[in-house]
Length: 360
Image (cartoon, rainbow, N blue to C red; front, side, top):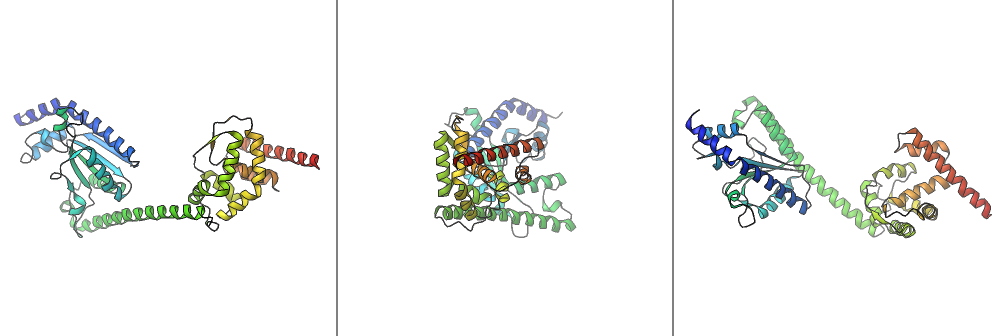
């Protein structure tokens, strides 16, 4: 073994505990920073470059690196986010909690001319900041953070697997194909971001329309249904009445499973849903009193109002056993459970019919 390699191996082994501590510390810091900012990412990948790989790179680039510890990417992190606008947003956050070296960092996205090959990302070279409670020794090391979208990550992984590092290593006949795929991914990234903004705008418009009682014609889907549960006046009244009966607080859950049940009743718009609730309001409250008065529940799902409205329609509507079975089969695959639910509905129907007869 030559002296150069021995020196690098010795330096790597002595510094490895520091590398691992930095990896752990920075990963925890990145996770906390993103969580505090309420930013969801696909992954924060991280690694310490292996000894063989580090020594090989050191030897290959002796003119650039004076020692293993002068390598900026010996400790590496990759933040993989969903949308391209998040790259800059997250990078800005990272710059508030770490010292970023602007001279060594590169925004490779800005280096691509219109005809060049590749699908690149933002790379920061960072250090743990001094005077922030970190061991002084650890603040001397540099490490790399890459910021990529999911599609950029997919491109880089495939490119790496194919073994091509630059456009010049691609056979001329294949460059056009690579460039076409890179262009498609870039368009896809932009399109996903556009769709995200359109969905956000759609949600805001739904919210406002429901609040102003101008949403009757809106199609019932998960977005409109979710907003309706929170903003519809009649829905709020029903939920308040049910919570007063039980003394319970409401908790958030997805209402998606109830869409199938509402479609079963031919509820297609928010106007249909409002009329549905109005028609079964009193019956729904009657069921809620029967079931919840002595239940002593601390919490109820925000869908509880829809639950009792649908049950009321099954009990007091003109549905036979086969239709009621069809209703429950929308969300249940167990025949035994379906039959239990059907029997319960029929039993409740008979009970309330007998009460009405007595009242007459």
